Image (cartoon, rainbow, N blue to C red; front, top):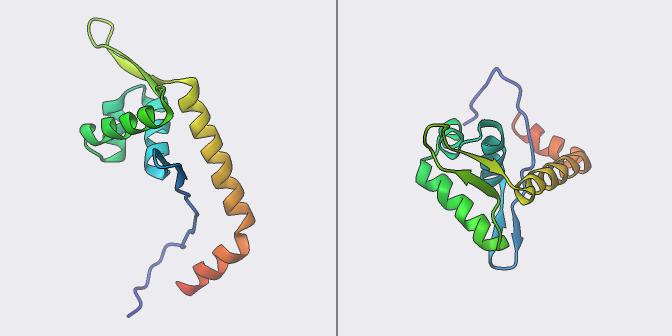
Length: 120
């Protein structure tokens, strides 16, 4: 059974990268880092992405442990408010992932279009 849709179908490759057994980087973690960079808050980033705060925190912890250094810096709340910012490592992860994603999508245009046509 074919479901019809009136919106155009977009197709995009979103890679998942494994470095050894300790590091896994994919769209979810990168989107979380990107949102933390925009919102300057883990809680706000989690809300934007529709994930529980605890899940967001555990994703950050897994990156910190995998790389052996933090991907974000946090400040405690209080009178001035708390917050979170990306470390240089966190910024570089987003930059490198975005570049990889663009390159994969640009290089796979023909294959992606063939796959998209299967949905017509």
